[in-house]
Amino acid sequence: MPRVFDVIEYPNEMKDRLVQRFPEDGPGHFKIGSQVIVRTGQAAVFFRDGKALDTFGPGRHTITTANIPLLTNLLGRAAFGGDNPFTAEVYFVSTREMTSVGWGTRQPIALQTPGQGLGWLLLGAHGTFGVQVTDPQTFVGRFVGAQGAFDMRRIKERLVNAIVQSATDWFAEVNPGSLMKAQSLLDEMAAAIEVKAQDQFGALGLVLKNITIGGLSPLETSAEKLKTMGLLDAQMYMQLKALETLEKSSQGGGGGMAGAGMGLGAGMGMGATMSQMMAGIMGGQQQQGQGQQQAQEAPAAVPEIMTLVEAAEYLKVAVEDVMAMIESGDLKAKKIGSQYRISKKAIDEYLMS
Image 1 (cartoon, helix red, strand yellow):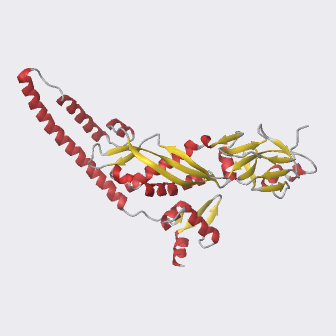
Image 2 (spheres, one colour):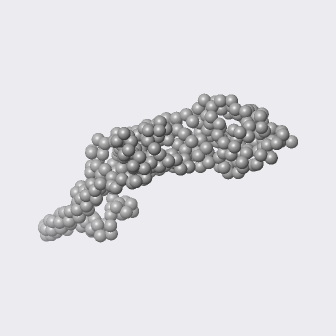
Image 3 (tube, helix red, strand yellow):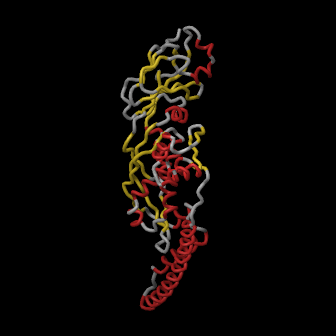
């Protein structure tokens, strides 16, 4: 006869661990009347048939059909008659904020520098961020599956990718124009990344907090890399390669005085040609940069229906401030599943009130 657990708990401190399954080796057998003990900084999520179901917050809970309605509906009330045990898994989730998680770029971030060098500078970036589970049911449903336990390492790459993509978007929108200017905007960049990445974190049941940028570092930039990243069109790439060939040729020389004279004359001619080509390439890049800058300066249309992040950007406040306004009833919003949608009209009415 299978063992029926009367007490369901995970008493150990969840330092670096995000999730711990009970029992550790797979589904367990429980019954109406079993005790669920959830400690501060934890949540307990019942899981069955690939679905994250009922969730318990901190405290001591006695299982009844009333506090496991999703599981009851899934199995049917007949499954809970008498002392009949039911089978499920319970995942204990850490709801404490994990701080100072390191992040860094694997792929370079492109900074456009019109009229300078190749017109682009490839950068690396690094820093830290904090993350916290705010929706344990969503988090378990998205990540856990058949895993008995896992820590930040299991999801870090996905979170870092969201941060790096947001950083890339910021560079494309703001276009600092130089590394020095970008370095002076690190705080602004961090705040923008936190807003931009919040929807992606929220879809996983998480919230992004306290992101920092330790610095930006220039990386090797070549025509090949820029072409691979789609930053150079075929014509500009061929011009740069031709320039590179001319530069190598100008470094050769002949023997004796005649050779020296020919080398000098050829070198001067090639130098003039190289200067003309570089001026043409840089001019084309500068025009391209100006065109992109003009496009960026055009005001973006404000959507009539906004996400939390879009509403925060529209109001120039943090996402948490928008949530506080919604929860207090000051700002009207519609919750669809686990996501909020706010109309521009509702925001404008709030601002006018």
